[in-house]
Amino acid sequence: MEFTNCKIIDLPKIEDPRGNLTFIEENNHIPFEIKRVYYLYDVPGGETRGGHAHKKLHQFIIAANGSFDVILDNGDKKKRFHLNRSYYGLYIKNMIWRELDNFSSGSVCLVLASDFYDEDDYIRDYNIYKCKRK
Ligand code: TYD
Image (cartoon, rainbow, N blue to C red):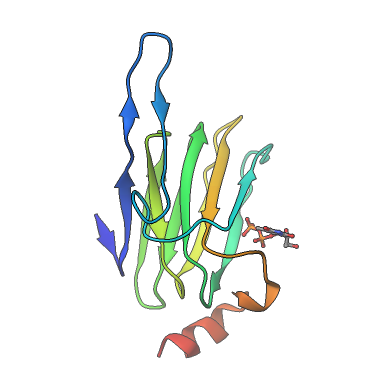
């Protein structure tokens, strides 16, 4: 399931009757160095997050708890990914517009990012994004 070089990546899962364990190594399971981790939580039902693209940032998104959808848009086509397990995630390259919706109650959206927070890296206007994609 690939969309404009973005794809679901399965992670190692160490099954154990005491509880399962999953791990992620930079440049191994995901194709970038992890400089930042952030998470979305307490998202009210019906809310939407995202609504932007990044000029350079790469991200890896995991449903650490619960479920939600990530809609990727390359300026031409859209694809909806449903994330609902913590042993895989969605790798999103730079210059892809994304929106997140359909958050289940208690869901946690864990994001690994290739760089520190920088507002200058965001494209928050869809029309500007579409122009830059051309
Ligand atoms: P934003 O990335 O727009 O949220 P989302 O795409 O998940 O809906 O960020 C929301 C606000 O939080 C914005 O004012 C910037 C701030 N923020 C930081 O200060 N540091 C961070 O690492 C992130 C991701 C956001």
